[in-house]
Image (cartoon, rainbow, N blue to C red; front, side, top):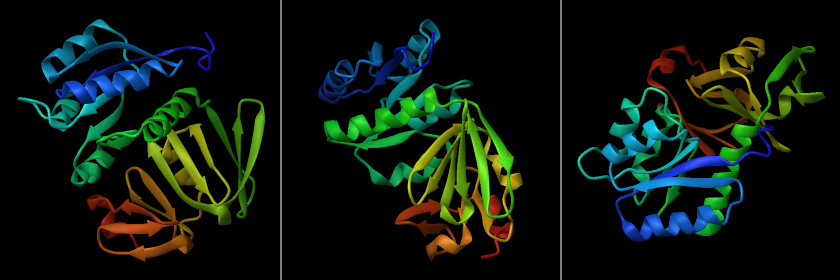
Length: 232
């Protein structure tokens, strides 16, 4: 089946009945999402994951007994995850766990659709080929199309598992490619890896500190292991 025509199985892991009900009502409105189960704790969630093929998990962080991130860390092959929480302070930890997005409670429907679309873009991204044209631009071949990207237009490159998002001044390109592959092709004087999930354009830095760099209004974390390697 063409991945763009398939439905994606999802589960809700949420111990607040009202929050779970709201999420379910949002999911049933999305023709590409199929809810295969909902549960209130990590034990039941593990059971659902063993029974069903799950593409996406909506995960509350404040679960009884085992907390959301602790549960996620124990999963060997987790599905994509959209976190639901009432607390901002967990975002940094989510960077380390490749979370697709954060939904802050109470969740507006418009914000839910943005997160769901981000997940679907990742699922439907095609395998990409990289061609180094010269120092000024690169070609990304996606399917039968060749996309020319000028290096000076790139703000930063974001990794999520085997996918990358190339954020440019005009649009964001989502392709299936390891971040290490594109890192090898970039000029080390112009681009630097600041985190396992981020490569940035040095010229686009707006604000920087020991733990965080801001580019195009977006705050990006500096990974502990990359701090000694970064010369900005």
